[in-house]
Length: 232
Image 1 (tube, rainbow, N blue to C red):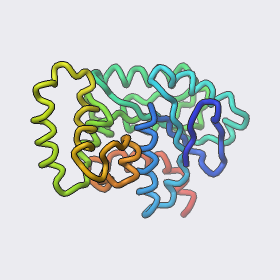
Image 2 (spheres, helix red, strand yellow; image 1 turned 135 degrees about the vertical axis):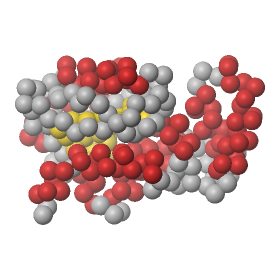
Image 3 (tube, rainbow, N blue to C red; image 1 turned 180 degrees about the vertical axis):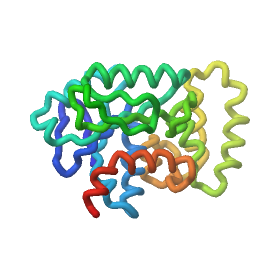
């Protein structure tokens, strides 16, 4: 399920597991990943995805969520997804601080499910994920770096070689090279030219079944652990 815009924040009993994403690209990428997972495991439908906007908006978004009527009663878990960017360790600390200051458990590392009896919300499990690794291993980079590893077209490697050759003379003057690489790749295909990342994800640009996504799938499954146990 989806939710966009801070002025549209709502809670729904049927989706008690919340995922906060940094920006529209991450939001739609995860949305279509969850749709993929639900085909084999309907329990993934218990997640609701929110777009918090930029990195600096994570803390105020958490505070806005926690003030909603029925928050304590409805919410069972809360996850944050964002880019590691150029300093994965700093990204971890930023998320941990935001969670802790908003009254939630603050996991020590990515892809770790945690509750804390000392927190303001001790019953709400928390966790966070950093792109591009989507695992407990810290790695600098972005969602676009991950997407380049998930390209589904048969000739993707050949096209990427052409992309790298085309961008090489301009690499030093492109501050967002990760985006240039991905969107140059899109522009060299008929199916994805002119599409945004989320639109390309919906159109099948990325192979969600690849091993690079297994750590994220397993982490989200652990978040659902209590619900799954109750089903048996």
